Length: 458
Image (cartoon, rainbow, N blue to C red; front, top):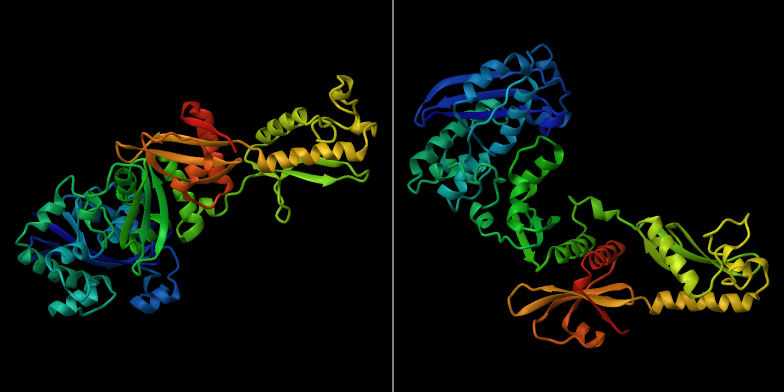
């Protein structure tokens, strides 16, 4: 078995928008080096000053060096039938694979990470960064932060790990179904294997334990594994690989509960790697205002920052449907609700379903009394219901509660309980902060699965 121990220097942290400035490859049989390859490269991209200060490789040094494409053929032949070894292997492999792909070569070889191997074979070391582990083992790095010096030190480290591997960690990592080749260097494969197939919410933690990402899953095991099942060269992927030190999770009985809990946790923890729900807001709102004649008018408009809507909607049609329902229920004028053009005669007036506020045949006081009743209905009389589904265990059921049109909370109930009123139910559930996104999820689910919905008296 032959190993290609690789180290590269780059212009930045992810392959999709950065180049390789230097590469070193030492081919080993596990005991000695049998082939060496080392070269500077013109990365095409500009080398940032801080990178030049770290590596000593400047733009002037590589200006007339050959590009990566000129070594692609030789490099592919050198690597394609070897085990790719590196310290934090996913970083080096992502760059080499990406740039080989840009040159028309698809690299697919097994990988070994000396960080992960070090944690397994040499537990209790003071650290597993290349500098710390080499210092601990007495391995001298002659040219630090340069490809050749770091690669040669990695060779010596790897040979030492092979000699100390009495429990077969290397072979276990090379197995086809092993997750060791794909996981970030600080995540235990054993922890990944213990993940359940249940729905739930998962948390990625950084070195200090802070949550940097929250996600939801229909199957926690499948979803978390999908984050590490490929090695995309984009920025977000590489940031994940660098920053994730631990994973925790909370199981839920249903996927809907996972969706809700994810939204709650994102709003509460505000993780740096989450994007979507930080800015989510319902697009439309139902507003009221008094016109110049004193009539209170209802209208659907795009949400305004500084005005609190009576109700919110994601779709304009959803808002219009509710407003039409309220218009008929409280005998409101379609023209004063902006559901009919001002330029034509009031349709409901002709049908004697409008009392004439649009033509000032009804007093301001009488009309506004009904509008006030309509607004009071929105505030107090919107539907209260529970969504009942299976629980985490056989003898329980899950429950999501909507009270007066707003999300109250969720939790688990004994399967033999009879739901009689809201107050009794609220005592058994965990209340959570509501937002428009959660409310929309619950309403959509209730409409899709009416058999799970139990209406409750307010």
